[in-house]
Length: 115
Image (cartoon, rainbow, N blue to C red; front, side, top):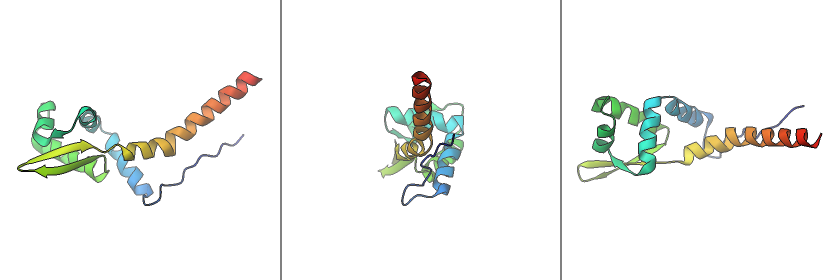
């Protein structure tokens, strides 16, 4: 039996955008950074303080990857840079990949229950 999934890309977004999100999420360090930003926005300095095992340059390199994937937004406030989580790329990945597989699994379980 074949299942069809909606694997179309959201208008205005490309497969390369999804690739950047997957690349960004592949790193445990970047996931830790996103977890920290999920609870509340942070300054770059505060984020560096939460990652004492990394130097500031390394944190900034990881931030660049997260910003290129549009998972983090930053704005200057005086001399500080305030960072926030931007969850829409993760939702796009969920809608494109996870939801379809989840629905297929639920359908399969329902058919098995009916048999």
